Length: 126
Image (cartoon, rainbow, N blue to C red; front, side, top):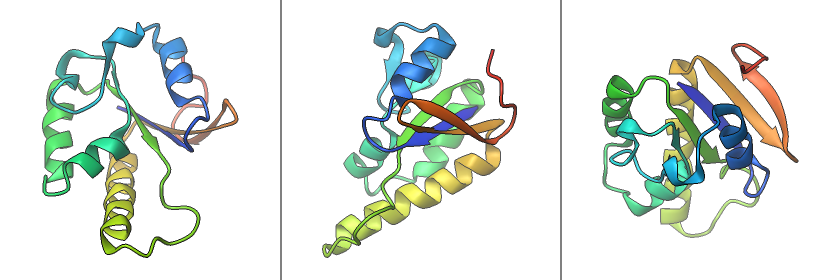
């Protein structure tokens, strides 16, 4: 599994599509769709839409059937701390989930202004 993080609009999806050669129609937006797709995008949106789910357990099931998947997630933990407790809880859940995924990933990259930075694993993605 490869985890790609970065701010909104920084080019994560374009980068992943280019590197995998996947068609945009093959991109999943939740783990249930991702069993046979190369890319799971917008992980943070799935966490927000499913606050009561056991996020890590759902992703563990996905990784068991699709271990080579590329997971994309917007960084949501930077900036001003939200006043609303549910917003803080969401950011916390996404951050902890990304930490767990990064620990398990073969490679972790951060995309900033369309430029990939390798945080873990091989710096060359063929």
